[in-house]
Image (cartoon, rainbow, N blue to C red; front, side, top):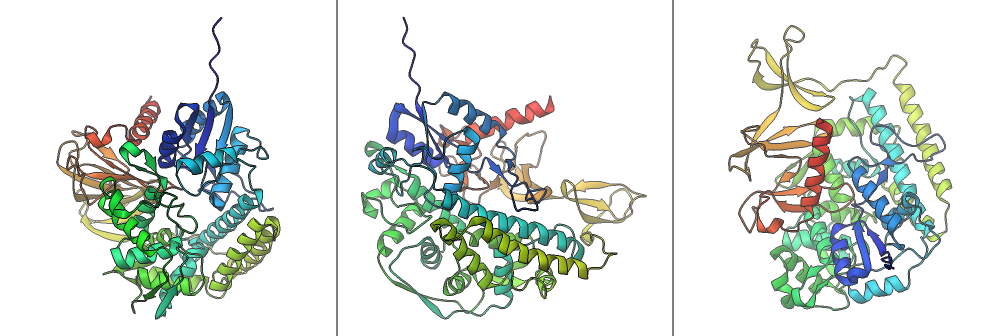
Length: 538
């Protein structure tokens, strides 16, 4: 009689990089799968929070097939462990996975490790424990407050400015600090090596952007292939105080296994650990001066700054000129619309107060429901006052029409830049007599990895851009992933970045025949996207 094969234990983690290293540590006794971050989240198209401030989570767009695969594997697993990062977001994700896959959160399912080393992972398995609901509640409280505020401010702005204009708590505070910028002369950073300190030093000493620093730090944490010595992380998780991993490897000894930028950042970390550092602020409003200003104010900024600044630039509230941030007319209109009604909601003191209360929730000193209700009740009163001031006859406004500089080839009238259901496009000013429309196409310097001709960029809804060959559809190369300035070191083709909602970007060569693409996780992602597109056509 055949013996039934025993089922494996399954480990779920939010990152493909962590999943890869965990597989190397644990061998065939465990299956490891990446969830790619949030599987369910608050909806984008509506507020997703009811009158009692209870959330309505839906499956994240594009995660449906992954969710189905994960459900199949969790049903087959002998036991399930959750290995998300040891921070508030990681705890919330772990609890979410318990709810989705029917895992008892009170069981010993949660693994905690701050470094990606074999001993740390083995210890985390042996000491698995229940989910920390207080930490998960703390993240959820901030998430609900942020979503309610940004959605309602967007509703108010649709009347006060025009549809599509919005801003959240952190970005409104950031915008106000830029408008009224007063540099902090210098700041002394103590020996504790935080993620904020890393970003400032990497910008000052290496000229690394915050997003670049985040990506490299994640790679150093998630594990490096040391070939015969196997995989291992060089630093602890960047979500807290950054330390060297237990091996404490010297920079020169690991240089052959690192990229140039990885080596530069690791060398900086290695030399700066346990050292106090004084940083002087530039006089102008730049990335470094803003970081120093935020740090001097005691604001928790490290995880949100790069996304916040990128959003302000993308929405044209500020514009960078030679690295210096300048307010735009639209940015001033945003702050003017908030003034008088939401001054307290978006103040530095208010932001710090909510951050402190989030920490109190995680420590069991405050109740999630009370924190949410106290802030949101006060905000809703201010929102109602602002809306009442608009008057009963107020109607939502549309974005002003802007001439593109192009002329309609059908009737000779100017072509206007329009924003519609599917994004930005050109439309004839002589509508409805002339109904000519066409997409906005920008020719780029990047080369098509398939035929070598130029790539073009077309902008669509929600700020998404499609990159395709200038001879499309004769050459069928196209992607939603952003091309990079640095070409592939292996074959010289254009590199691309696949961005995810709640994790670090994934870089890959656009040439599918490049040796660097062998066993690359992007292959599976692109194959699944192709299958979904073919199924949609059918």
